[in-house]
Length: 449
Image 1 (cartoon, rainbow, N blue to C red):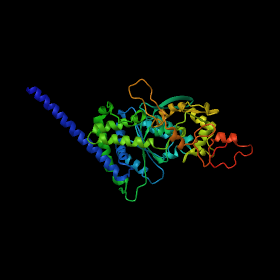
Image 2 (spheres, rainbow, N blue to C red):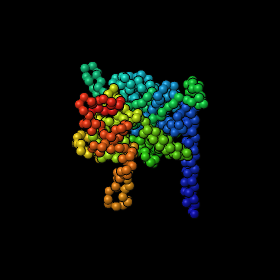
Image 3 (cartoon, helix red, strand yellow):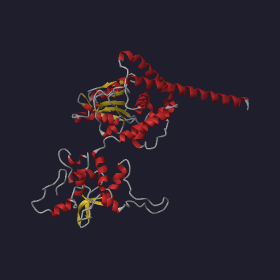
Image 4 (spheres, rainbow, N blue to C red):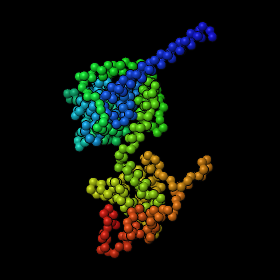
């Protein structure tokens, strides 16, 4: 090897060593931030702890991101550590603005003056009974996750009305009781805080005592962030399986930071992403998603069902809301209104000798596949892969199905609501009930025809 080649190799080697040392120092810095937060906050899981640490680092790199995730500390009861998480964050993030019961004008001006990190406590008061009075704040929080987002306002100067655009892009941490609007939840890393168990211990937090240590870490983060800004701006981190679309937008900045640090952080970050996204999917679904989920249960192997039979079965589901929606059970009109938004409408169906209004299973398959976490279960087996034939589905054991769910002896409709001695569906019961007898002996929760 020539002297020149040896010199080049030595230079590359020294660059690699320097890069390794820088990565080790960065990992040590994140470990310190992680440890500092863990002194004062009792996290529900280790994944929540990792996510909070990376979110704080991301706030120092706002010029690098196309989209910034919100982080939301939510709990069902007070005293669960939500405010403490914001207090600890305040020492570590750049330009913190602590917001509680603030006006929209104040918040807009703060965001417009400089690039703050908004720490909004008691967010439940914004989206509670007075939600209509806070639409501007909600709009800021929704729009400000995207780089370049602005809030348009009209300003009166004397007799002249002018328009102005106030920047809305900034990092936001939220804390509150209960939940958040879906539009905000879908842009947030959600951490469900809990009250500490009897054996859990944390250090008492006093700002005057811990401010100096927190600010030292903040300054170190700011200095390190300047050195990796270009690197993370151009990064395209690999997403774990199942993290896509908006979830990928949320986690991209945090994974880019973890990859820049290297060490154990890339694996820890991806484990946190999978765990927290999975947990968010298990949270209380919207009423429409709940309806689609329950309809999949109700239809079972039926290809068509009468509207009345569907309602009868929905009302009978344990722990389902359909028997009491704002004091009234779900009716045919309500069912139609809910399903219309998924482009599912009722049609004339035939069940045995009966025909009337109902729904077809095939009309619901598209909504099930698009909006439910997993596609509807298939009870049969599919054709060998690679053939041109479509998969064979819904091949069931008729004997087993009949034993599990008896059929109406008159029209053949599967009885999904089974009572002792009952062998007719609700429709046929009504048609065979003598006048004046309707309603007698009906059990609670059974639909009358």
